[in-house]
Length: 447
Ligand SMILES: *[C@@H]1O[C@H](CO)[C@@H](O)[C@H](O)[C@H]1NC(C)=O
Ligand SMILES: *[C@@H]1O[C@H](CO)[C@@H](O)[C@H](O)[C@H]1NC(C)=O
Ligand SMILES: *[C@@H]1O[C@H](CO)[C@@H](O)[C@H](O)[C@H]1NC(C)=O
Ligand SMILES: *[C@H]1O[C@H](CO)[C@@H](O)[C@H](O)[C@H]1NC(C)=O
Image (cartoon, rainbow, N blue to C red; front, side, top):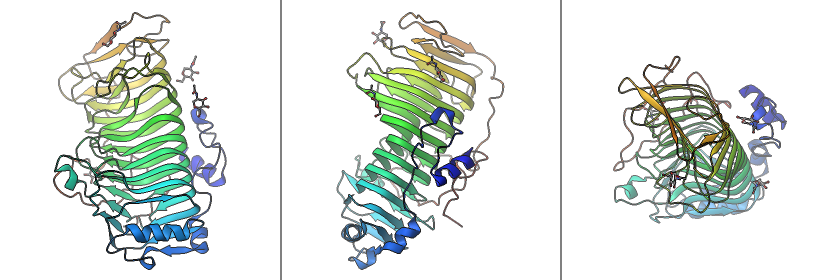
């Protein structure tokens, strides 16, 4: 399947292997012009646009302005302190080639170190796989605050971000805001073991995120509204919050989303839909091949998510969502149900399917499943009828390990998250993100 996607993307064809997401890649995704063509057009080396060894910000902006109508902004091997944060807006057919390390030195506690806006045919990549942005977030976190995000793309089309490490962001690591026809892959994200340090937050259209590892204790790869045709696969949430959709509010418009091959360890959840009131819908979602170990929650729809204030509306409607082939274990299944479907009473979940879910508890010898406010649904504690009693809870108690629950581990799971009061070392992009899988696109790092 992966091969056919790669070929289809390379040829600009519709990959037919994904029935669920047949229109995901209706157009070719990724940059329209190859990096080698961009190199041949123009090279804007930041070392020729000022003194990037003092502050990368002004030379990066100047190099961008010189190359934004076509070419490559080159940041060669080396270490570049960045005290001035930049917004690179407009342009097309350009790239940033990051072979070195950008280190935050600026102390502005908001915004983005690098914001890319309103551009097209764009690539941000490392060709040696050693490109990294080091945010030294601990300098903010240890004082109880947050700082700038590392990287934000807003209104960017036909793009790719790949083979880069994003480390110790003082806030979110990577945000894709209203982007389309893009690809993010072969990335490693390592933040501290604290909330508010999201890995990847994405909303927009026709986006493929694959082969990504996230450590951070908050969102791993999370879809927000509005979003259509987003495929997320081969994701390693390693001591993270876990993947999610949300938090959702009024006017939610999300459909045709697929997550496949998601490995989650030591996280808050394997997947959570989260809303509290709100309106609109989440529909046509497939979540398949999930492996979890030692997570607090596993499969979770939470229509009364208490970390979000109540939003205007009757509740977000969750419909036509299928969870298939989930295995592994959770920390304490008698305290937190590994199957937990808690839908809004005034917008009952509709047409939810649970199949082949086998998650057993690490602690104790029983667990339970819980379903509330759903209709026309199938599997486990779900309600196959077309009527329901508001807030009537269906629980089932499981007193023996479900067959087939045992699942493989990744080669080296962390035994603890990263501290908030010391620097996080820059890792290299790993060569696997799901047990037995190798990246769909060969990673750049050779070491
Ligand atoms: C949801 O978003 C899609 C894509 O932008 C749009 O075509 C559709 O009209 C929206 N639906 C609603 C109910 O707003
Ligand atoms: C129910 O959801 C499945 C996807 O899980 C979808 O294929 C099917 O068309 C939906 N049925 C209805 C009646 O919407
Ligand atoms: C259902 O439960 C929710 C959450 O506790 C509560 O806010 C709501 O009023 C209840 N609705 C009904 C109809 O009982
Ligand atoms: C997860 O995996 C990596 C490498 O696969 C391993 O070195 C590390 O201990 C684990 N943790 C993180 C956060 O990467």
